[in-house]
Amino acid sequence: MLAGVAASAIVIPALVVSVAPPIKPRARVVAVPQRVVPQAELPPVEPLAYQNLDPQDARAFNKTVPFSTDPNPAARPFALSGTSEDKARALDCMATAMLYEAGDDTLGQRSVGQVVINRVRHPAFPKTICGVVFQGSERRTGCQFTFTCDGALINHKWSDVAWQRARETARLALTGRVFKPVGYSTHYHTDWVVPYWQSSLDKVAQVRTHLFFRWTGWWGTPPAFRRALTPSEPVIPALALYSDAHRTGAAATEAADAMIEAAALTGKLPLPTPGDADSFLVTLDPTIPPERYAALAAAACADRLHCKFMGWSSKAKTPTTLPLQQAQVAAMSFSYLRDRSRNIDKSLWNCTEFSRPDRSQCMKQQVIGVVPAPRPTTEAFRIETLPGSRVPVPVGGAPRLIVDELSGVRRRADAASPAPSTKPTPTKTPDGR
Image: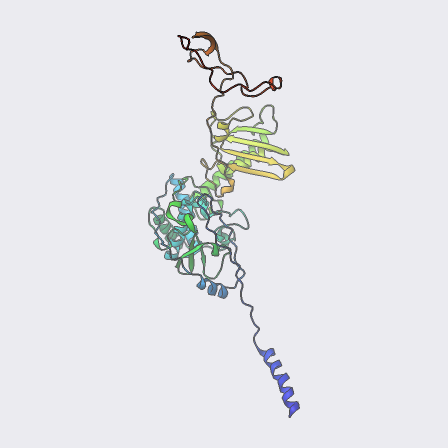
């Protein structure tokens, strides 16, 4: 009997362990410490990266994140400006974001569109609709909207009817219609994922399966969303399949590339600056789209190890010699720098003139200061006879006391002499007293 009991004590637990489902380890969320960015510091735009959680665990975690109890005011109405071509490109970029981020669902599309508009108004993001939507799309990691860099535009097509509905929703958003529930949100994600940036922001709303967030502190309040916008919308070649406006722009880009290639073959590329074979001071051809300036610079620099290509839109502002004056630098429209010894190959645009989808492609704004004229080191003097003495007086000026150079500094020659008295010397009145 004792042997049977002992055997049962060993066999039964072993059977339980062998047939029991495996114990799943509890998902661990790495929280980013919440930091209120001060007004003097621009908040960073974090790349879109997700916690390693399966959808069930992500949903469970997202339910534990409370909504902010601070006010959630509605955003101001937005009205798009620019040329008809700019408006057409912005409309198609917005419709693409709405459709690929929220599907063929008007409510979800309106919430996504409001976030895009909020970003355009916020100084931490690009200044155009297309710039915001396709921010970081040129990199494998770092895109802000996943459909712009995961192949969705090529692998998934929407019906013409779905495109028509998305464009109409986009048109309303770009002509003043506000989606109030998300307020001034600048971030969102679906409830089955957890981005690393989530814990650093305030959760303010939920629409369908999307959760919406805004920055903490001043950067999430209405005054932070008052930036002046750039009406010039960039051409997005990836939208040429869906958008006539972007297809036309892409065709112009192809034509510019063909022109650059022909110029290279015929020796008609810009020539270097006299006296500096590695520097170019160029008036930019207005028929070349700004997106192709880098290609023009690379073609002009050819196989040089070191090269500086600087371009101006105005011939009147294009300098002819180096070094550049401060005003000439401030007026520059484009610059390209190559230094292969340090692995540098960088193009920058003047973003007050040309909008770019990525802020890192913008030149630093030059501030032209007024340099005061140097004070004269010498003055013209005349000799005037003053009561009791003759002293030099500035020409055209009032009489003034001239002090010997370095007065008050004791020299070695008179170091032993007593210091002059600071008491006033008594003078006699006319009657001798």
